[in-house]
Length: 264
Image 1 (tube, rainbow, N blue to C red):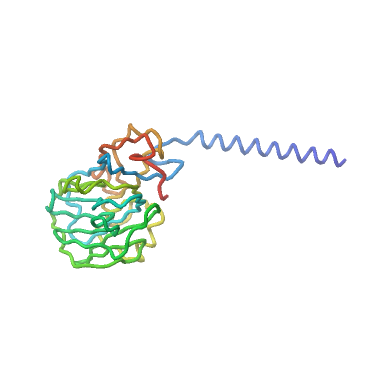
Image 2 (cartoon, rainbow, N blue to C red):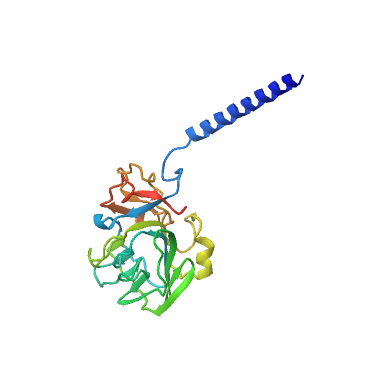
């Protein structure tokens, strides 16, 4: 009797495993690798020596209060390497945010001729959330949601900016591309506070949030896979394809200068 009971239990377990396996296969066969679903979170990796960057189309982008925020994973400190630099050339209507002011390792912020650097440095080889805000004429840099110094800045001019870069300087390649990865780049037309940054920085947005000007998830590619067919970063804000970014000089088929595992 005991033997029959054990045999029944064994058959029940086998049947359950087979059933769950069938469901798993069915669900995964219905999934496709696209910009709307990827099995792993991805980020975009930059390689200093390759002068890789992304470019957005001409637009105003900044004309009053704003916030720039991004998760960064920096592996080496490089001179004034940009998160973004939007403007009309060197020293012309620029709004820029860098992973390091000079080679200090402290993030740098610049608007219309005024600049300052954070009072703290960015740790290498780990994900760090960086944000730069302008509220009226008060500029603030945040590191992981904590303010790291303030300065008095001019209000950015309400003009069309023609050269709008992610990972590239308007001053040329003397300010090199970053050595590291970016994830969840967001530009807002309001100045976020520290608590607001902390509340939203650890999850993806829907893209429909008020005052969200541009939003890049960097989820277009398979981490460290062959992504050579991808030429565009999708803007996930309601502004849509008018602010998509074009990729330049990325290899897109290796563990660097490609989509890689992201923060989330």
